[in-house]
Length: 272
Image (tube, rainbow, N blue to C red):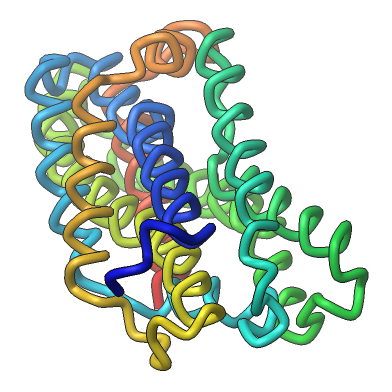
């Protein structure tokens, strides 16, 4: 790989890591906002916990990375065309920065995959899209918030039914602790899921240009992506945290735990 620095692949890797960093500080709010709003965790401890679990989660799985690497486009079609990944990454990074600036919660994954599909169609046409696998990815992106809503809705009804006899103060005391545990699970799942999308793009570029033949993510790529995601998470993304924790709805410990738990369940289901 001595000549890697002289190719578009290097720029793809660099911009992938920049996207990874923005993903870290942008999507931190999805993990910590509820626990901060309910005061289950102090902001600094919530961020530190999320940084740690994001890093660990990013190192564990590989299936999502493989899906990104060959499920959207055949790497062979990108020979001498890996540069088309660059505008897709630029678009996703710009989207993260714009929505962060205005404090708007949004999905980095939706932005990245949408931008990548658009860039592929612009250069290769619809023939460049792997419609069989992309349909599964798009269904996942579409149905995941719906499934999360239904999980949270019915789990809240279930909790209300079995805990109706307890005083609110006692319920909150229990859910303070439950919420701390759920944050760990959600942060781990977030790291395992979102980091793999960045890894998948890097692997796609490496395979397309012949630097490797396997869709397995090299450990140096895993570690680099995990570290950058953790660094991005450490910056906090406070604009979006304030929106999610204060401006959308009032969050109680019970609803905060259920939101975290439901998100972790949905994200874990997408990992593999």
